[in-house]
Image (cartoon, rainbow, N blue to C red; front, side, top):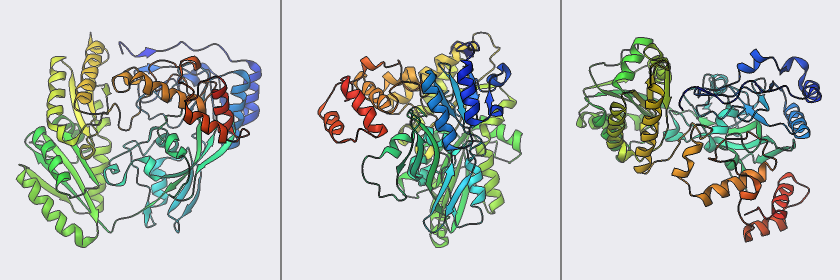
Length: 512
């Protein structure tokens, strides 16, 4: 990350016959080939790399997606599915050229089934819009990433997005029942079932979080959650970030089971106040936002216990949001916190490692020391209850030598988190950004097995290439022909897409 890197200049033109076939599939107006149109899709929210596609296609149906994929196979063209472009790891970039298949026009909420607590939605449905439609019902869609006002459910599935309320309600995979998928051969299949008692391999779980590398999700059957009877949201201000972090561990240890538990440092509090006027206390070094929900009777007792616990951990100030409007404003300020940094710095770089909650205080202290050592600004706002850190390194790209310092600080932060027992990513994904760091967590055998799974779904390597893995695993590099593979090859019908893929790998000695 020496600079904002352009991975390639605008690629050479695609074959005219291929463009014509795309136009026949989706309509001439929905195939974008002009340089200025391609530039719009050259990056996602990970702004440190740019890779303009050779064309952008905007299908409006699953069949159109399938037709586009078949055309890519016929002409040997790479393809990458894209939602709203809010991803933070470069997962929606056309890294090796080819086309972007943008799913934003696929915005139908196909069905809401309150009796079975499910919704069927197309991949381009914006996360927040589904909850707007559900507002008058007794249910909601629980995954709520900070980008939910823009991010699509297809993108949330690709990255296995979390959000503020995943502490209690789980991440996206916990709410996906079935998926409609266009395979890398252009076949349309459904994975999963209409209930949680799916038999066989959990392929919906495998696809959720695969970052668009195994196929293209076009529809999802998602589970809806009943709204709690009552909600309380508390704001607690602390003298320093270590005290607040220790309080987080105590809240979780004492069984208060919050629905959300977020931490903001002093810089973030000031930035949010300046941007949105929410009145967060600025005479403290850290603020916790805590939500508990349940029955009215249970909340009365839990609210008292929580107040006592906050006081015992040196909370300087405790406030309760007493109205739905107050609660909404607090959470909107939290979700827009990153945008508020723009008043002070034009760019940021962050990681989203997850560490054990018990390590929050020492790790945050080490992160602060690292940023001081490299002379870079740091702001913290994160899912404290999960231990899912979001340290934002803030900088001006025009400053001399800043990129090297930002990069060095970022690597050091990763190393600190991994040494504390952490993981590379909680919800932003590996994509391009962290692919080179995968060997810090996985040994070569682990990576080969992951590449083998990728090859089962994507024999040609055309589907979102260049993501997840530190090197491109060619077929000759992947795995051995083991007993599990033999058994599966012998029982998998050859006429199916998965059967054909596994059989092809087996013939070449590549299926594990």
